[in-house]
Image 1 (cartoon, helix red, strand yellow):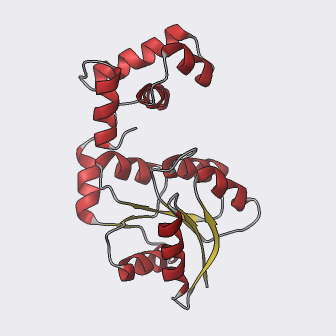
Image 2 (spheres, rainbow, N blue to C red):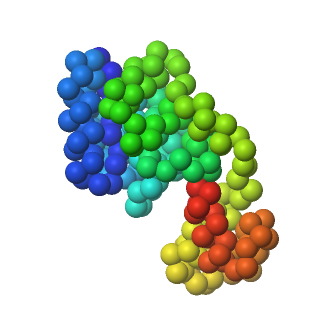
Image 3 (spheres, rainbow, N blue to C red):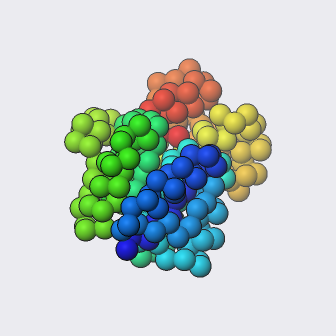
Amino acid sequence: MIRVMVVEDQALVRGAISALLSLDRDIEVVAEAADGLEAIKHLSVVTPDIVLTDIEMPNMTGLELLEYIQKKEEQCHTVIMTTFSRSGYIRRSMDSGARGFVLKEAPSEYLISTLKKVICGQRVIDPELALTALDEKDPLSSKERKALRLASEGYKTAEIANTLFLSEGTVRNYLSDAIAKLNATNRIDAARIAQQKGWL
């Protein structure tokens, strides 16, 4: 039996995926979570074989959850499911140790097949998506990414500095570096470009 945790912020989608997986006699959904933070709480109680997670979620994204699982060396595999085939998402998922990457529009049979292949030690990422990911490398550092994400949410320099426990000068440097790396005109333009690429 493959024990799966489903992490997805939209309740209807989460419920539908869980119900679909539960129809397979080899899969048991042991937990559901609305974001990465809730998933981490579940990990202290249940031990899934696979964490099946969306990327774009409030509070903690799927990519941040992936990084947490890799850092904590949790004894479970991770599979990403998303609506977006952005090269940055795929690349960061692969770099963070994801064993599978599934687009939400893929047939249900493909998702179930992916989970079964992952539990057998295989990595399942569509070859075309993998090539797309290798074409473009994310130029942003993690600190530049965090500062840019907050800027895109309307935070001012001082607020970003307080949130990240940095000086305002350091934050300005991170944002300036991000703008330069992305050939953007300002922080909002830089955030837009990074968002489109899946780097934010």
